[in-house]
Length: 191
Image 1: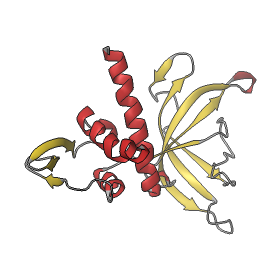
Image 2 (image 1 turned 45 degrees about the horizontal axis):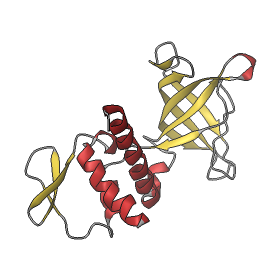
Image 3 (image 1 turned 120 degrees about the vertical axis):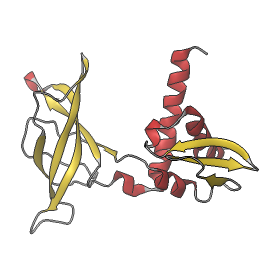
Image 4 (image 1 turned 180 degrees about the vertical axis):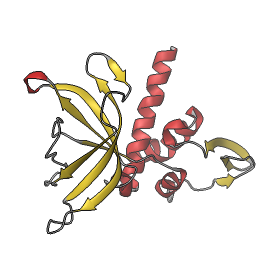
């Protein structure tokens, strides 16, 4: 297995672990402070021009609307052009305010701005607390130790299994940690 295959395998496991945790802890996907969403900006001839990423920094419910109707203040996190790769957020508004009217699929509909109505809710960063909640009944027989600052170690029968870096979310964890979570949350579930 070459380096590129190894990186792709880690990304695939990370994606499956992320989905398993999001399923076990659904509030990760709630559209509130810290939640990331993406959509497309609309270019010439109404075609999708670039994928835009935003983070919710404020949400206000509309008076007289349903509980799901709200005004969102979104912080621009940058964009990815469909032909040129990732671009920094310079040249684009730092924040935008949109009114979202939710349909049956829980997809916000933009009422202003040059953005496409197809939104994808990415969710907020997955923390150790989210991960432990997802592991609640699945990982029996391990201990958690905090020997070093900024890290938590998972041990079983005195043997170190992996370490969670407390300064990072799930995406920033080691390959060993992702493999351990994959074994517990995904692999064991499919057997």
